[in-house]
Amino acid sequence: MKEATQPHVERSLLRQAIADAETAQHNLADAQSAASKAEDRVYDANHCLAALRESNVTAGFPEAFISRLASGAEVDVLALDRPAAECRAKIDVAEQELVAWRGVHEAAKTAIQDRERLVPILEHKVAEAARDVIRNSEAVARLMDGLAAMQDDVARRRGALHFLMSKQLLPEGAKESVARILRADFDSHLDTEWQSAFDDLKRDADAPLPIGD
Image (cartoon, rainbow, N blue to C red; front, side):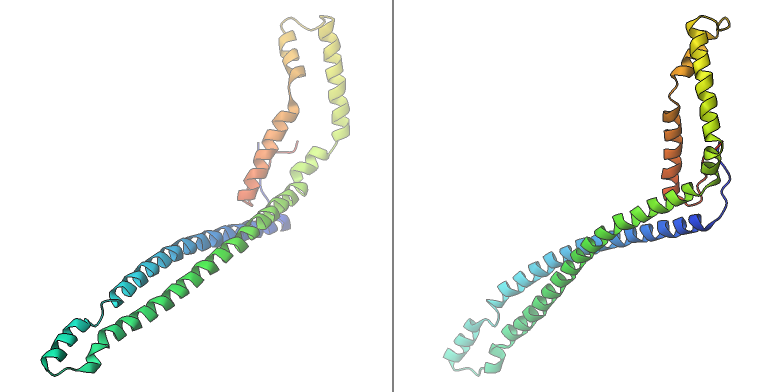
């Protein structure tokens, strides 16, 4: 069974802690995505720059000018260097783009490192906020209420049942069910129930808690 949730300061703080942790996770994912895309752009820029440098080797075709000059034809000497100059200008731009994309890639990697450090810190805050919700809950208060008296009663009942079973003083057919109860691992049941509630709280600030009585 679950108790109805009631809004209070602990749940409000938990709700904010969960939101902060989710934002940090999204920011980390953004940085990882940006780093991957920037790495692709660095590769593309390197490839483009290599192609431009290769084309610059043959830019201008000086052989044609040599032939025209040898024949005595008119030659526009300024045009000789124009293709090479244009190629060098493209190379300059490509080099600047490569440097810029490398900078973006490094910035994204740095952001990943920073955000990776932040995520566990905020997740720890979520866990602590969830613990505060449980510590201050009515369910825990009910569990603690009269605990000593209940423990004494359980111990007395278990002792009496052990004695009755050992002396074969139990009603017909009751031995098996009593033995099963005496062997029951109550701690395991409670741990599972409350562990599940704790895990739910770390995802949902309005998750209900087990009934404490």
